[in-house]
Amino acid sequence: MKLKTWHKIVVVLLATAAILQITSKPAPAHPYYAAGLNYPLVIAHQGGDGIWPGDTMFAFQNAVNLGVDVLEMDVHITNDNVLVLMHDEAVDRTTNGTGEIESMTLAQLKQLDAGHDWTPDEGATFPFRGQGVTVPTMAEVFTAFPEMRMTIEIKKTNTSMAKPFCEMIREYNMQDKVLIASFHDERLKEFREECPEVATSSAKNETTVFVLLTKPFLGSFYSPKFFSLQVPEESGGITVMTPAFVNAAHERNLAVEPWTINDKETMQKFIQWGVDGIITDRPDLMLEILGR
Image 1 (cartoon, helix red, strand yellow):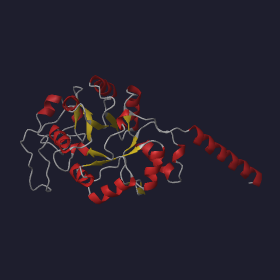
Image 2 (cartoon, rainbow, N blue to C red):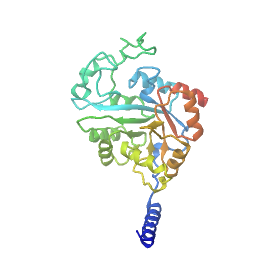
Image 3 (tube, rainbow, N blue to C red):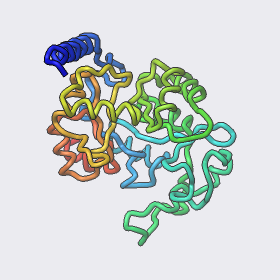
Image 4 (cartoon, rainbow, N blue to C red):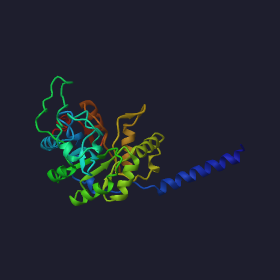
């Protein structure tokens, strides 16, 4: 290829890069990330699944009593179209029942013991069995904790919950108090279309694109449609969490909230890097580090 041709290609690439950098926009401000909050936010994963049975009213109430900033939870839809909270798509791992949540009614789920299989000592004891811990509904959580911020992950379902979920958020006036997450790009896309006023984090493909752009320092070319990057420390052999990644995210006005961080050493490292929050099964440890 002639030198002049190479020169033209370089000029075009540089011009394209300049245009992208000029036209790209950071995420706008959103009330969910209000000034005056206690950053970094202590985000109790499932309400603190390392301390008590996750995704239960028992966990959420105890996490609030501890003084966490955000309750994290996972939402599903039942066979009779009720929004309920549980981490898995099936009830087998955490309850005394079996079956897919989406094939069950709320009445069937309420009969289960949601504390049945939680153990602090790898199965030696099950301290919450028979203690009345049940599967909660989204409405119950909104009713009980109207002042709390919440990160709510839309789980994989056959039935879309975007419309009823958005309607419920508006009904309980939680538009500025919830951040919606999902690993499933299509589910998050349809929720954003249904509920554009509510903050969302990045979906799987969006996260991948941004992470890869930050490696050659091209994050400033990205115009996010989300407000937060909730990411693991590493994924697929690629280190995600680095000081440079945190800085690149902040340049795009994106919060960085790594998951699921349960040891003090890593918590302290990420706090020093300036993360905006940490998603953890052990909110008690993070509160201790922060001196709260």
